[in-house]
Amino acid sequence: MDSLLQQDVRIPVQSRYGSSELAGHLFLPAVVPHAVLTIHPATATPERFYFSFAEAAAARGFAVITYGYRGVGDRTAARAHRHIRMRDWIAEDVAAVGTWAEEKFPDLPHTALGHSVGGHALLLGYGGQRLSGIATIATAMVSARKIAPRSERFRVEFGLGVFARVATRVLGYMPGSRVGLGVDIPAAALYEWTNWLRRPHFFFDDPSFDAEARVSRLRTPVLALGTSDDPWATAAFIDALTDRLRLAPVTRRTIAPAELGTEAIGHLGLMRRSVAEAFWPEILDWLETRAAADNR
Image (cartoon, one colour):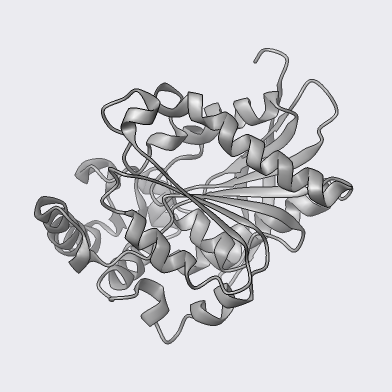
């Protein structure tokens, strides 16, 4: 990996609260890149979590962009962006990064990987106008009342839906680092997220969010990945989401821990080098195939 070039980047984003910037990184291969891969993170997950996968993709010849959503990280950032909702990450942050990537590399095919909410944004069509392929990791239509086992449902409904909301109201930010739910995020993002989780069909049941129409218009091929031991993104939850993609070709894959020689993968494991590095070539092969198809 020593031959890779990693650059700090600042990506402008226009928001309902005015102009801002996203901090990110650009990973460049030692050779001329053959395609671009933008990685859109999961909720309460720091940018650095994706560096290992970004390095692996850059070693395959991708120019790779990573970044973090506004307000994600520590309590200072979360408080400073306390009004940022989950839909603002989707419609503003993801869209800004997609536009920046296309302007930075106008002559290369573009692909994207979205983890959890990052995948939601891509399936809603916010990741750019020129995407050749979209890979989603653990991106699903989650309903808290249908989560199993009961212990995990209690953790979501009480731990996230009650305790975390109370803590957020007291502190002015969601203390993810204190409650075992990743890093800190803005209060408004937590409130909207838990509101969606309470609905039978997640954000599709939110009348203020035009989700159904947006996903039904997507035409970009999708590789939808999940794991058999992820209670947040079960095969049924993922299928419930991808079934709404009326025009986009979808390739579905569920990975069991035994395939990777590990005891557990869960919601985050497919992006961990220590867990899933052996599986990464399958993801990158698919993205390369899509990029090559659009580059002919």
